[in-house]
Amino acid sequence: MNRIVKRIHTYAGLLTLVNLLVFAVTGIAQALQWPRSLPATTAYEDYQPVPGERDRDTAERLASLLGLTLATPVQPAAIQHDAAGNLLLDFYHANGRHRVTVLPDQHRLSITITRNALPRYFDVLHMTTGVFRSGDRRMQMWAYYNEVALWCLLMLLGSGAWMARGRFRQQRWWSPASVPTAHFVTAVLVFPLATMYAVSSLPLAHRTWFPATGLVTWSTHVHRTGGLFAGVMGLAILVLAASGVYLWSKGRSNRAIELLVTTTAASALVALIVSMREY
Image 1 (tube, rainbow, N blue to C red):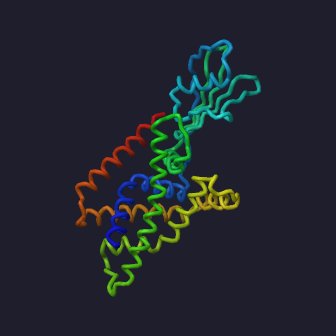
Image 2: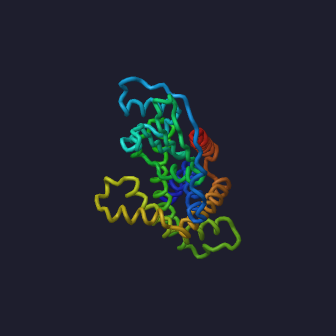
Image 3: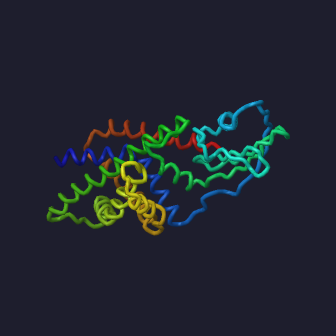
């Protein structure tokens, strides 16, 4: 049984290593209160109006023309009108916000671009799970995999608690100045905090599962006002990831297969993260 639990723990960590690092960066950025966005800029693009075109059709057409696939499908709240009656499109996406004002008489678009800083970009990625629906295949793939990462985190906590229980039963579980001890002690100390974040993430990721609004409010409070706790959690993830990879590299398991699986998953996830950070 112990070997099975250890194998589950290993694969859960290796397969979601990139996701865990995204979680870590998000927590550290929240604690340090890094800037969430860069200064806004305004650009103009030529525009050819289509007679009789509905606002929604215009919004979808412009989202495609401007390459804002991460902002699709276009939500009803994104389609507005300014005081002059011009069509105003508010496209929110992982990289920030494109506020597009359609000026048909001038045959051009006024585009105010607010680009998310990198930590905010990671924050959006860390919040995106399987219930999210995107018109961009890359974001949808990330959403599904990040859902897997959420459940793997719960498995990491459960399997870690099982293994810690067995280690505490040993007469000599403490070995000063060693990587296994650093990994073990960090995991034990941060376990309550990690459990709080993991459990509270479920009502945020799957609100329809939890009709109690108070639970969702509490979960939002935990994730958004953590401050110091978020930073501690982020640093702990970095320590656990580094020491965990080291211990795995020194283990006796079938590292060739595990390395192949891990490298494939990590490479695909990094490619998604980089490719979506395009505008």
